Amino acid sequence: MDAHSRGQTDGTDPADQWVLNPQTGDYELRLDGSAPPTPAFPRQRSAPRPGTGTDTSPRTPDPGRRDRRPAPDPEDGPGPEDGRDAGRRKRKQPRRSGRRKALLWTGGVMGLVLVGGSAFAYYWYDRLYGNIDTVDIGDVGSDTALADGPANILVIGNDVRTGKGNEAYGDRDNVTGHADTTLLFHVAEDRSNATVVSIPRDLMTEIPDCDTRQSDGSTKTIPGSEGTTRFNESYGVAGRDPGCTMRTVEQLTGLDVDHFMMFDFNAVKTLSTAVGGVEVCLEKPLKDLDGGTKLDLPAGPSTIQGEQALSFLRNRHGLKNESDLDRIGMQQKFVASMLRRLKEDTLGNPAKMLDVADAATKSLTVDKGIGSPTKLLTLAKELGKIDLKNITLMMLPVIDNPDEPQPVTVVPDPAKVPQVFSMLRDDVSFTEVKKQQKKAKDRQQALLQGPRAEASAVRVDVLNGGGPQGAAQDTVAWLQNSEGVSRSSNRGNAPAKVARTQLVYAPGQAGQARKLADLMGLPAAALRPGTGEAGETEPMTLTLGPDFKGAGVPVATPKKVDVPQSRADEKMCEG
Image 1 (tube, one colour):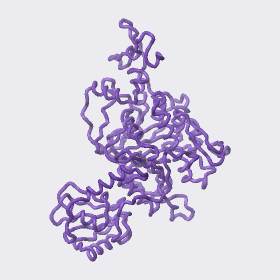
Image 2: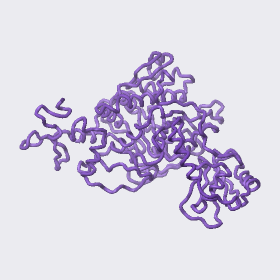
Image 3: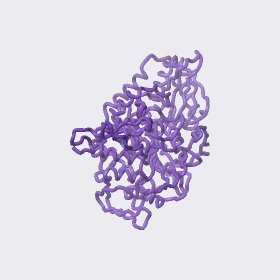
Image 4: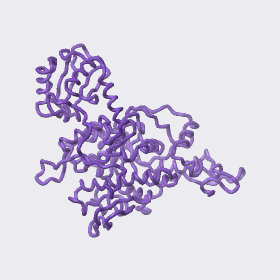
């Protein structure tokens, strides 16, 4: 066996010759008991990123981006074990002893010890930890890597042009970047399936106010957009950090976003190279020798990596309409191909996995909830359980912006987008996963089980939070005249729009809530039980959302939606 890998010819494990010097905090090589220690395996930071040469110029300021952190003290281990707490931004877990944390770490970090002993493992942990950038996004998101229940992870492709060769892809003055490519990764509660939704950068949407943490620890509120604006401005404009993009997606979808992961152009180059290339397939040759990408790919399959991979993802030339929407389709196929490569060729190879982890973390920025190799590993292990055939990829359904004579932007499809988001909120699979569908049905039935109040006993205030004009008044008239709910009142427009219809009620009003759900065809996901008790005459609050179509029309979660979809196990030439 290779001595560098594990053992030497005399049977000595090289890992046993590396000893932590408590005075320096470094591991040092001791060839025998009396020899003086010699420095080795310094607490190294990552090497220059591939493609950047030896450039040591200061990093360009980036909103929300923090300096790389030193690895935790070896005596403390790499950090507490990730729990499965379902809370969002919970308080810190109690400290464990250094010995217990070391055991948890050694047993969990992707088999590093299989590659080269404890000192080698520490070297890699320290290296990966030093690679990762984190952003404090305040109270948005979750403190746990992957809590119980459905999870939503936002993957943001930042179009900042820093790095060798990247200035050829657009505006050289873009020093912070924008949310150029955004994927919402929804993971089912039982981890049987996942849905990846691409959000077009030119989608017109409202960006809410957001609180951002400053370098001095203070909080600064960044004003939201006045009306609608391009989605890609949710990051990098006016000091908006990735937390602002998360809040924008939460407002758009009605989902809680748990984490974000942000990559730049360099990540595409280094990751595609680390996995040994990504296979793509073209129906016809793709040549853009005179354009910015310099692509020259033949028809049929090709394996691309590095600069060529980034050019492929940025290219529009030769596509159907040469638009950003066409490019999204190519990007999704590339992502699916890389997922297959990772699962089939990388996850079972510890040495290759280290190369991929090193490449990924060099260009990675995340929230603090997943800001360590251990937490990222927890996330990766859970996501790795999902069969590729049960990972659905789609683009958010959109239509041309009707307010533009010659549309250059898009808006959400008013018929299909509410259906897509309703399925995600109710954790309904876009693939045929019977186990998951049964659990969703059982959960809904459980919430709606119990006694019902009489219609005459139901008290409810009705507000319009995004339904058709006059929806609140029409609903109250229908409830009173057709269903016997005489204690219903029209309260006009809601203070803010909601993503979906919702009924808020106190525990003591559960019977009234079930009765109203029966009458209106409300799904279990629309019921929002509170914790405080209500007075005897206090009404429930029903806010009508975009999914409300009219009085007497059931508001139910669709079982499927007619939008273009693909699966991660489908190869490009077969799609």
